[in-house]
Amino acid sequence: MVEIRLENLRKTFGDVVATDQVNMTLHEGELSTLLGPSGCGKTTLLRLIAGFYTPDSGRIYFDDRDVTDLPPHKRNTGMCFQNYALWPHMSVFDNVAYGLKLKRVNGMKYTKAAIERRVNEALELVRLSGLGERHIHQLSGGQQQRVALARALVIEPDVLLLDEPLSNLDAKLRVEMREEIIRIQKELSITTVYVTHDQQEALSISDKVAVMDHGYVQQFGTPREIYHNPQTVFVADFIGRCTFIDGKIKSIGEYIQVQIPSNQIIAGKSTIDGYPFEVGESVKCAMRPESLYLERTDPRDNEISGTVTRTIYVGNATEVYFEVGGIHAQALLRPDAPVKAGDKITLYARRPDVMVLPLGGVEALRKVPGHPLFTAPAPSTASSNV
Ligand SMILES: Nc1ncnc2c1ncn2[C@@H]1O[C@H](COP(=O)(O)OP(=O)(O)OP(=O)(O)O)[C@@H](O)[C@H]1O
Ligand SMILES: [Mg+2]
Image (cartoon, rainbow, N blue to C red; front, side, top):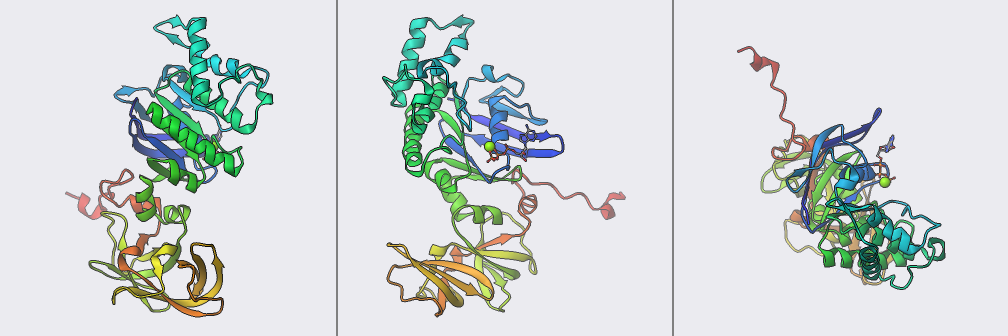
């Protein structure tokens, strides 16, 4: 088991900055996901960890060992690629055995018997015992996925790297395989980095999630932290559902008072420790659908009034879509909520449930002392004439 430490990583391809300023510690035995939209740099970051790419700058450590300049086969990582990359003309057994045949331990090859034993153990682990002689094209998608996983695991890697391993599977199989991966990961207690663009998947399997956009890690934290304390508008929007209302800060106290266009005031809290909000600053108030209620619980609750455009009964709740001064908002109310399209409604939000977020994404985080992206402001020219 190892801890992976990424220090200030940057990787470009010509003019394209694929990933930049990545600072993270992935704890040993944990499953961390890299989550973000297509092209945000997930595969690039995973390949940097695997050693298939060399960073333009920054260092990668496995525990205290600097592996930045080590080739992939010296890092002892097992990797599943985005498209499995199995050899179709070879048997399941040979696909899994391939890496072991190349591997040397203290300069020694594995014996035939040792290879056979290990491959069979790996196939058992992914529940493919007995299918070793089959050819890849004789397997279902889910079974092929398991072969790819067995191949990554058979070398007993210190680090398991999985690049969208379930993307070719149907919804039901995805959930099934997801559970399998968690089982194996916990059973072996192996430090794992898992790439996905599916936020539901990321929340459900991860110890930690790194939310990426345009090459930057916008937030790295537990699923709960990411959901309840998003650090940027992008994270709040990408993870779960959210209603955003633009406004300007009117005052800052225990709660931040924000004036919204309809001249109403919304009070909420900052989700970013140490962000220097200022009176007059343009911000977004973000609310999760389940944070809106039909009844007031406290006289200081925020009131949000609008017109219902649509309701959807989803069994255990009613989804209510409504408009507040031109803004599309959504609430998740109890199944028997007496609400229908065309109704004027007033909903209530507790002040701690309203998240006040700065504009500017990553640039805003640069103003937070102690944040991995913090950039000290340049000294002003006025004070430089000493
Ligand atoms: N070998 C390469 N040469 C040039 N540009 C590249 C190369 N690999 C990646 N890029 C660019 O770097 C950026 C990040 O790509 P990356 O493959 O890491 O994204 P991703 O998050 O894995 O996307 P997806 O979800 O589509 O797999 C993209 O803009 C991509 O076009
Ligand atoms: Mg990718």
